[in-house]
Length: 296
Ligand SMILES: *Cc1c(COP(=O)(O)O)cnc(C)c1O
Image (tube, rainbow, N blue to C red; front, side):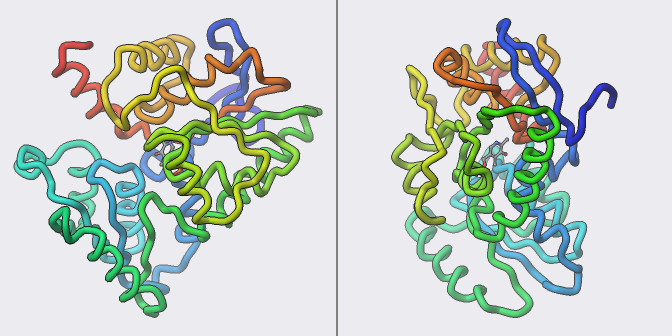
């Protein structure tokens, strides 16, 4: 790693526009990007604190794989509840699912009809249980605040040493947990994000679970809405262009965020710092899908 300023922040020129990128994808190959910060409180926790961890959500989720890595490191049993897994994936697990299973994750499939009920039961059964920990989907938990505060502290120190007055911090949102706690911790900065999982209303509803939405968050929308984790030629193109410019971003969150950010670039006042949210371990299976569709 050469030419990095403090806190992995480096200038980045893209489409003849200038940015800074905070390279948190380099923190750890699996526990990388914002999952490192969101799970920071757990990473710091002594092994003896818990015996098992329960979570739920999609079977290719980055949060799932990060939790699997964490539990493997701590020696905790990892129980993960999901909706029915497609048969081809069950016969031949790939991507994040196969890595998480290799790390010992116990997958509990439940029917679509039972899913919400099962998740609610887990929540009730294990919140307050001394040996077990329940982590909501995507790590959308107040526990994330502690780690994201550390991320904010790094940004604040860097901003100070660079004498930057107006700083815009860009990062893509799933549950919005990272953007939410960043905005809370950095009231003088503007947080620009976009809804990658659902639409803007869905993201706002997700953030409202955490509390009142800070006024310094802007949820940017593009001219077109992309379905989560689906294949689009323009997203592949942004990913390729970013790669040509020297940085690998993830094809699900990063590609959408950059695509939307470029549409809003001229209206942004001040410096832009893009916080890399990680997720690179999911690129192999996304690229396989693009190849399979003949788009690559
Ligand atoms: C999980 C994830 C996000 C979304 O983070 P939230 O805090 O849920 O909004 C963004 N980018 C990548 C690469 C992720 O893995």
